[in-house]
View (cartoon, rainbow, N blue to C red):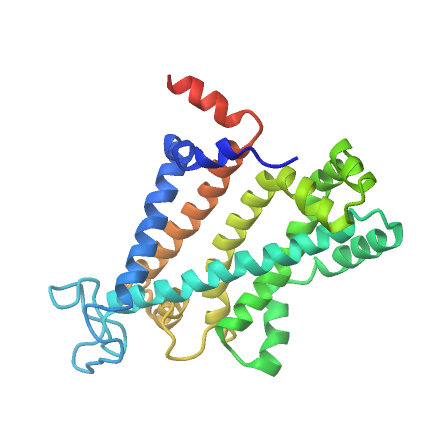
Amino acid sequence: MMANPSKLANLPRALWRRGSGRYALVVLGLWLAVAAVSLFWTPQPLLATDGYHVWEAPSAAHPLGTDGTGADVLSWLMAGSRTNLVIAALTVVCSGALGLLLVGCMVSRRAGLGSVTVAVVDALISIPTVLIALLLTVPFGASVGVIVGACSIAYGLNLARIARPAAMLAARGDYVASALAGGASGWYAFTRHVVPNIVPVLSVQLTVSAGTSVLAEAGLTYLGVGVGAGVPSWGHSLATSVKFINVFPLTVLWPGLVVTLAVVALNLLGDALNSALAVGGMERREDDGR
């Protein structure tokens, strides 16, 4: 069974009607806008430093102050929005692809394949994201790719485990049985009839994964296994100033506030998507609005 096209067409309006969805759309829209603007303009050049004006308070020249090298905090946060946006987007794509692949194997009618996949997922899901990142850092070094790889593996496994019950129920439905009886392949039946039925679960988990990847970037960068030196990111701004939080708290406040706003927006977006895509949810909201 395919998703109702009318629901997808009305999805933006359904999200905007909810307070959480409205907040998420506004914050994510600002995030995208800032990332786009930073490609062409920042208040100060990123490589510009001034040893005579370190840890400055907000001023006209530096609206959010400067860090320990005299670099403009606002410029680094604007440029860092691109890095974190790329990390979140790639994590969603890669973890979603891995999760769906594992779910497809777990609900396969080949009993051996399903059992082995379930055992593998249960065995690997307990490995912390930090440990995966450390293992990837050894051959590849600290980079954005390491963050994306570690988050994609960890969140893909988690997605597979959470989506499995709903996928199992859909895979045993009449639509799948009819498709298989008509000669369709197992993967065609899975993508055609199973995946649309687990979209609400996927939407929540993928948006949560995006938000968690922002937190993971900050934590892994602080540990030295995140983005490389000189690469602007919100985690980099936190890592370079957190040691002086007692003396210069504002330099930690701004990146921490940006990370909090983005993570909350992504989590609320998942909740709003879940409500909007739930069976009958959109129709009920449209009736209420009349």
